[in-house]
Image (cartoon, rainbow, N blue to C red; front, side, top):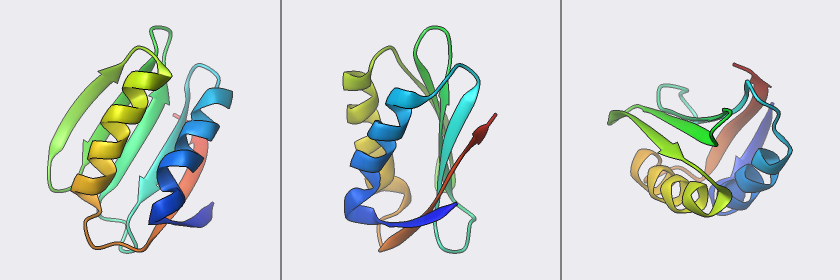
Length: 91
């Protein structure tokens, strides 16, 4: 569990995703912990869950797609946040 700056959230998430094993995930939450973006490592690539303003699921086959989707989700779910809670755990 860590608090990370919103500017570093994308790079931190991508560096952690490179090390994920199948079934592990990374959670990014706002201060009140009522909005979440979750990245889960799967056999095919990555599954992203968005719960907050929007409740959607996304798929990414590689890190390039993951970066594009994650960048959009962070901006959409955490528009006024300066710090995020970050967790790495088994899903």
